[in-house]
Image: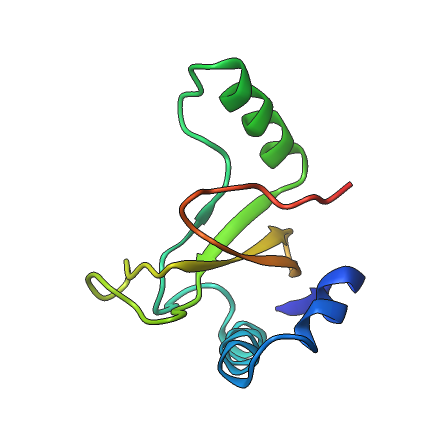
Amino acid sequence: MNVEFLDSFKTCLATFDDETRQAILTFVFYVRQHGLKGLTGRNKSSVPINPRTKKEQANFEYAQKHCLWHYHIGIPHYVGDDGDKTSQYILHYQRFDDRIVLLALSAHPPFVLPNVE
């Protein structure tokens, strides 16, 4: 699978500490070799399930329109069971058929969708 970086995220990558940069590059290497199956952390669509409020509906439409997903990258560490481990930091990306585009890294909670537009 092809992995690309949004230009603004590529710029941010240079400002991250070594541990964070290494976690992101490990993710990139894995996805290029194996795709998105079998990742250590939780990997899921960022489209909210059953939106109930106007804000949740707006997030639903935005995340769906931009094919947004997020991956728990293991920073500062993983907690949980194999195949469903979570972490404080998540890597936001767009998921298409044969490629992903890395967009941002953020703390979670709170869960905030990245700016794609």
